[in-house]
Image (tube, rainbow, N blue to C red; front, side, top):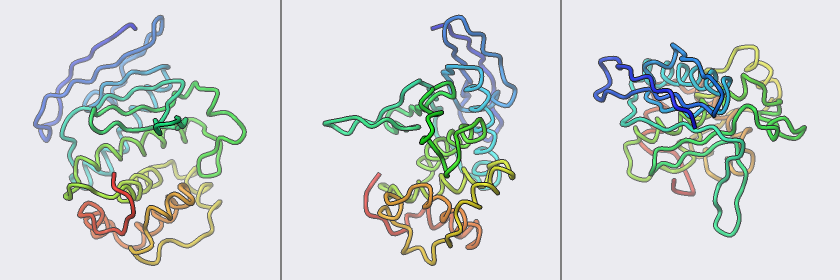
Amino acid sequence: MARRAFPVGLRPRWRLALPLLLLSTPGRAVARDERCTKAPLRIEAATDNDLIHACEAWRRVEGFLVVQRGLRMTAPLDLIFAERVELDLGATTLRVLGRYERSRRILRVTSAQADWLREPDRLMFRQPIDAEMHTSLIVHELAHALLLDNFRVAEPGRVCSEYMAYVVQLATMQPATLMRVLAQYPEDDFASLAEITEIAHLMDPHGFGIRAYRHFMREGHATILDDILGGKVGTDLPM
């Protein structure tokens, strides 16, 4: 694999000098993207579009969680795009859109070029996975990684991270796309924190995400984020 490294400095708020490393597949020239020059990411991009989407995704996550809410990433991440991403379930594997290997700080996301994303039944929020949806997918996964660096409890419930990852994904979506998505889900938000459980997430992940976004917007950003990071959300399964 051909590699192009671009060491760059970071803003003063970062304690570590974390380089951005852009990788490309053989024979492809992946251009440097100025939106990524200060990102704590090492990106292995399968296509130019993967890199473009990754850089835009980090810009959104940084703005929402780092700049506006003061969260910090403790170490750089490897962001790897692949034709196929699988979750090991022991006896079998499950093909997924993305997954984060927390212990290795490796984030794997299905490449924008994967034909699997264009299958008729492969929808996200009941919408085809176009460039904006693919970008929002990366936002969701990056938010997971950043949130896990900022929880104040040793074993946060999975639903805590899912709640906020969906909030960031939807809150930073392009307005026109967000309007189309919300129109697909007339359901109300969560009435209380007690309803935000892993069972609710497993039953309907994207519906859970919509309810989480509406609940977050209604409840007030500062209060609910503090509750999430403090583990004050009902949950059923550990991370």
